[in-house]
Length: 356
Image 1 (tube, helix red, strand yellow):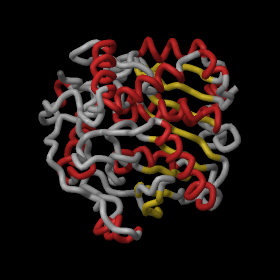
Image 2: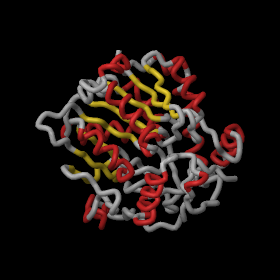
Image 3: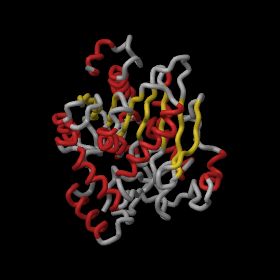
Image 4: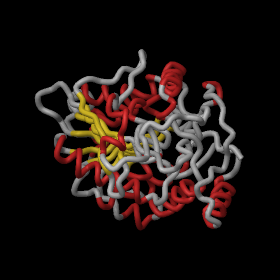
């Protein structure tokens, strides 16, 4: 069975970026300490940054970076939560957009992907033991990196799986995060070879019999712009493919049955009216109407029961709105800056009502 939208169609044999052995942080990180972030000719790393690794509650090393604006006074810090199979390098362009507006950016690669420590010997399998581990990693990142090393107020920009994590953790983030922007939050599934019900059943069965570490498919192929559900911008698509080819150790293969089971359970919980009523952080949901991964109807339905949330449709855009064509990407950025106090106050007064 193939779940194409969730899986990067790229060869799955990749070297390990972070050695599993060693008792000290130096040994865990290994050679990666020599170069934490990676650049390609068409995707250079932003300057004025600090990067490194932080340790989670259960001893995993996660790669992070903090990017500062050039202004003397920061307007706040945006914490970016990535989607599945994403990594810091993929957001270099968006990070430049944000720091140019006077915002700092803090972000990290989620456990089991990007330049962070992997969780299985078959390191290309996307795995998680418990979804709450993602939330605890976010809490650790806020505590160890964001609070001591960046500038108030704090905002959250979360894409896809990052949006699901943000929704799940939101009731406990009220005293830390001032506002949230969720880009195509992963609260539903579409565009697969099988129905979500079949995928859920198969994943749950494998997990129940102790085979949760197995993916539902191993049929991977090279990325092809013509049938991709993520973006209609060929230049940005090829830029991301070039990064994957230059640094395949950053990429990830199919999710395991355990990952899927945990994700579906979390979707059920965060989309319940009870959970949504418990979220008080003002939130904007940026919803691409041609999303090939998360149904637009699911995002629209989410907003109906989300009293702190407001839906901003981006007509014609696909799933990865910040990797999309300029016309769609600019609309998403305009919505973001109109909602985040101080980041675009003069140019977006006409849409400032999004924050009320």
